[in-house]
Length: 236
Image (cartoon, rainbow, N blue to C red):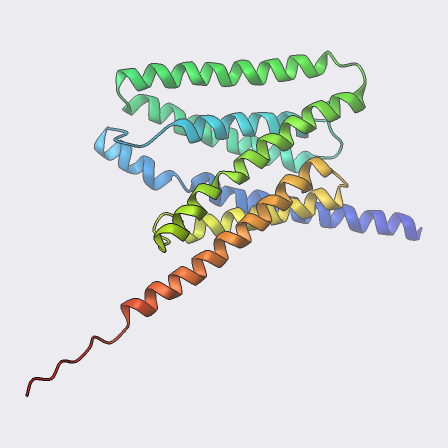
């Protein structure tokens, strides 16, 4: 009875962490909206790149497949968050293609086809593996690698912040959403005893803490610099 209650408590906290992760992920999914409002207003993608949305779509599709019952156990929250994420990324890609020049349009269409082909190969290939444990390891490693590379991408921004001593290129709410989402799914993976979930999200949590710490440090430094009283020159 006590063991049942303990397992039930773990399951409840896993669902809470997963639900929180879905909510915080939504903040990440809507963050490009100001960029696309500008693109639609100007009817041009200007110097914006569509590659982040292509990569994010592939990441969502791989993680969505990992969360499926064919691959892993009790990962419904992974399926929901990545289903919503894939839908958002696909919408962004379509909008990008509609407003970009002909050369970039063809490039984006080819990359989109490549993403669907790679995702299709992963699905088809994993279904050919008869042993469920081996199948879990195969898709889990791909999912983990994809998430780690996604969470590692802010390292460039972190380096830029340190070099420029400015948080201009590291929006606070984007960093906060990343930290909260990865922290939630880190706990979700722990409660579900799933190393392929808690390992990459643990890395994401640490990187989120680094980003927020840098933001606080350099933001305070910039405020202090702005509020310094100018030297008062006296003329005799």
